[in-house]
Length: 90
Image (cartoon, rainbow, N blue to C red):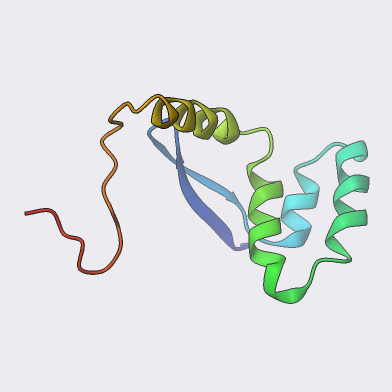
């Protein structure tokens, strides 16, 4: 079994492909060619972030994030909390 990434999209836990081969296999030929061109030149330190970005493509996660950022820019409280150490809410 290939490795996976887990994330939450639309309030549901979603498993995404977690290897280069599995991410590539989830794409049509055109996107796979684009992925191949990029992934070969990604520095090792950046590989996890780039792989997640490609794995998330087409899941709706970008649209969900965009809507949250729009709400934040309007000053709306979205119920987010600071996850930094020592920032526990009393």
